[in-house]
Length: 352
Image (cartoon, rainbow, N blue to C red; front, side, top):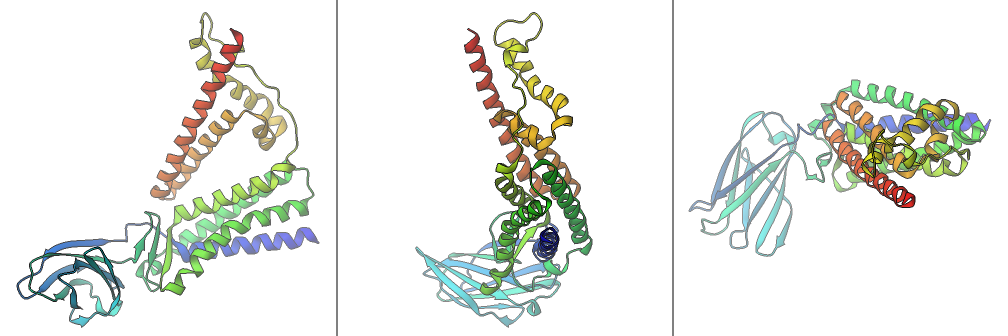
């Protein structure tokens, strides 16, 4: 009975994760734009800018000017804009004006800005279709942004299929590698699902209270979900993995024929991991094998796994997320090689 209950809860959380992917995920960051102009005010205190826009969507107009040149009024296609907020930093005013989608026309659009005072000081004018860009993969948009409605349902279906296969694989792996009853395994998997979904739910439900809507690139969403799930599962299952020992291999036993000193050890230093993989992986299972190898070997295996995940992200056209994962993977490789080198040096000193 307990097994069925937690299995239903896991499927419910997975369905909620697919729903969050559909609500938060955007295909790419290429639909975002920022037009920036730095123009001097004319003798009448006016600025006239023309924009060629492709879609009708809500926009944000940001005007930065000197305290000697405060904003009087602004029009978008002859429609008066109401400042949402203004801030003063040092001697610079920043005005934020929302442009409703009904004011925007596909094609040529006109912005008229009037400043108080007679001055030729420059004014910085920015027009964007997003409110705040935290990173290349996390952006806060208007609730009625066109970007959300331009998404493809096929991507959500693909995420659901890939996620379900991944979930089944994880359930089978953990059930086979831990000395636990099936009901307890499903309970721990359910607990592992909660942190990632809680974070995504917070991103989805909290920004609307501030008049915003969060958007994540689809690849970045998948990376965060999988990473937090695996991290949570690793913490929960760590103490339940079988304590089977794999024999250790000494680095100094692997030497190139006819070589002397440290140079003959460095290249064959990777042989212990290769021998453990080829000999013991089929017999003991991946989790038990991974637990008993050295720290440097674990880091290198993680590097290989991340590279394979990068290939999947590239297939899904999630280049930004793949770039971030690749950067982290090569950082792991550098750390793993450093640990391996330290181990080799210690073994060499012991021999002497």
